[in-house]
Length: 413
Image (tube, rainbow, N blue to C red; front, side, top):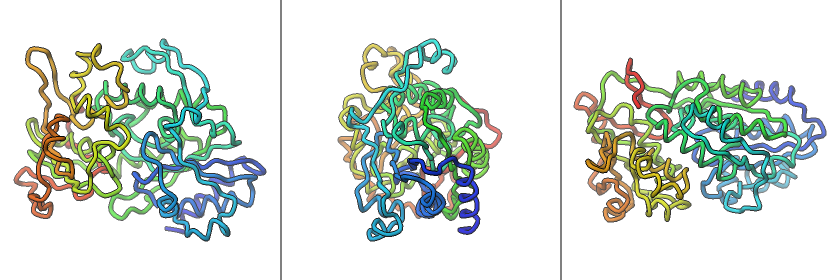
């Protein structure tokens, strides 16, 4: 496999107009499964002899910055190699929390947003991006493609928006996805309204862009497919393969799903994937249990906002928009992702379709204050759930990247 990856990478990089130019490699953080050390070494080996500069920017979105030790592990670099093999390569965290990070590349008018969103939103969007994207001659995006709760399938230009973008694009794109609902958009093939918005924002970035999009096998974490080209072309090819690799179909819904969240998700902001990747196969009135004893925070970054609004279904916010519209729309979107689809009206209150229970290091009191269920993780043995599908109980031993869907079921909204 290593030889195949090397050949594809070197062929893809040979077509890149990079001689004597400054190249910025944009990669995901540690919340994505991908053999990045392998990819990084081959990309560097192919480009380093040709380029004037080769640096790396970690597309954090609004995730926490990676430490030096985490970056070394993430890229597979022994510290002394920064003075030998990778001498001159600089690695940067995207500084989403620093206003000086950003530069505006244009405004998408409200009328165009209305068209892109099929009439769901009509607000102007100032497209801001990390200014480093304009300080290099070429942007090289490298990352995996999976079913995604906001855009349909991740990857491609999503590593620019929201990967290294300013807040406005993040908020509008995520809220648009929430209006559609994660249930309806996750794993949907083709160009969704949110993907149209992201691609339109990317078109305003004048720096030439190239992409290495990979599909990672869920069985062994190895690369099952690798595609190079423009961000749009490489993503489309990878998304088609991801739809075959990362969606698991079942014949009937389950009353309970035990999602065991791996350590790469360090707060509920990222661990919520254990909910929406299984939501389509939970029966009405059923329950998702997110088992993650290592998680002690709802969000390291957005904890205060989540404490103020709690977790709710989409209509809870939409039908009380005057009350909630001043909160960051991206956080509102995350709230709906963990809660799932449901209904709300002032007379009958909130009626989620399913229950969400956290078996984490977060206390029962804090769960109640955030409007989610609680279960003591010490009372749970995930192994005891194995092989009980016939009883209506599903164990997902590594939740977060595989999407579960009912066979022959239409997408509900």
